[in-house]
Image 1 (spheres, rainbow, N blue to C red):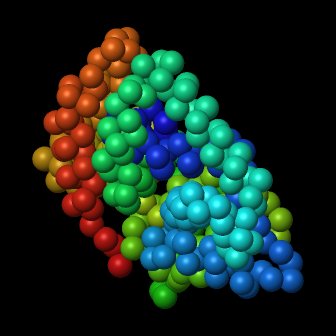
Image 2: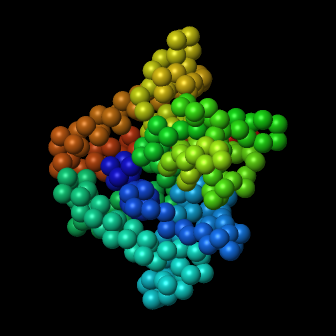
Length: 278
């Protein structure tokens, strides 16, 4: 997620999400104020169908409040842990140092050089695929509701604390998630609704389907049908992405912003052309 985030100029979201995944979710859920806490989290998510977007917006709000020295009251009002928010901020800095050490980030260029697409939600969802794959859920419409399925356990449910627990229908056909937990049912925590293209471009390896029509992922569990021209475009883009990443690893001094400009532009355009299901 961090490597792709730096290449695709979407670094700030990658840093925040990676830090939260490595440490803990900053949202707190007091037993006697659960509805208020859920509403606060949903207000950060907006219409995004994403717990990760809620996290990003909450962190941005916290940073703004911190600049005015009002971060503690901000956390109290929005059911956030101030200790966790500070830890996420510290870990982000450590991640930037690591990326700088391996040549993926040049601090001298400043943050703007790596954040052109940080507010592009399609790109944010794409880097989530890069980081969370193979934690993928299929969203299948069942009448006026959506059912959720994973390869490993079949049907699952959205965790009640998720912003997605309040939705019945979703615009995009897949979810990526941070973890599964088993209590009264098997729940997925911290989920984000994503498109076919995000998954195809930033998920795992692609294989031709056995029927010869379309391509597959996760050993055939996920099947994608599209016109031959679209499938060829996706395969070529994936190939170019892999080559770009390999070159950067082999040559840390490679200016990936210039070298990969065409690939990045093509990926962004394809992500923005995604089809909404419902």
